[in-house]
Length: 141
Image (cartoon, rainbow, N blue to C red):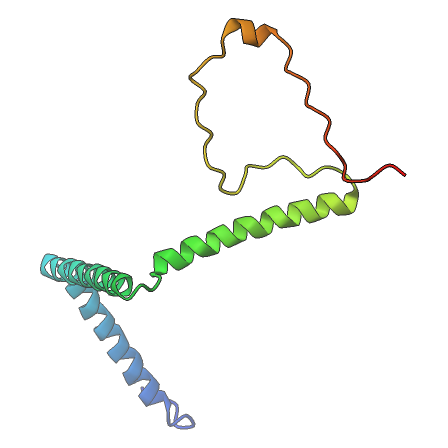
C-alpha cells in the first residue's frame, strides 16, 4: 500500500526531507562525539581566543600611543560617572525631603595620612589662644 496520499503532492517531498534530516543528524552526532572532533574544536577555540586577546592588546597599545582612551578607560569612566550620578541623586532626594543626605562612601576621596607625631603634653592641656578680632571693613559713623 502507498503511504502517500494522491491528494497531497508534497507528501513525498516532506518524507524525503525528513529522512535526509534524520540521517544528517545521526551522522553529525556521531562525528561530534569523536575525540578528534572535540580536540579540533578545542584547538580552534583556543586559537580564536588567543587571536582576540592579541588584537585587543595591540589596539590598546596603539590607542595609548595615539593618546586616546582604550575600552577599559571608557568603561572605568562610565562607572565613575554612574557613581557620581548616584551620589548626586541621593543629595537631590535628601534636599527635596528636607533632611541631611544619607551617609554614603565618598566618591573617590584620597586616604588621610596617619597622624604619627603627638603634641607635647603641656600644649595639649592648655586651651588654644583666642583669635584676634578682625576688622570688618566698616567704619563707625
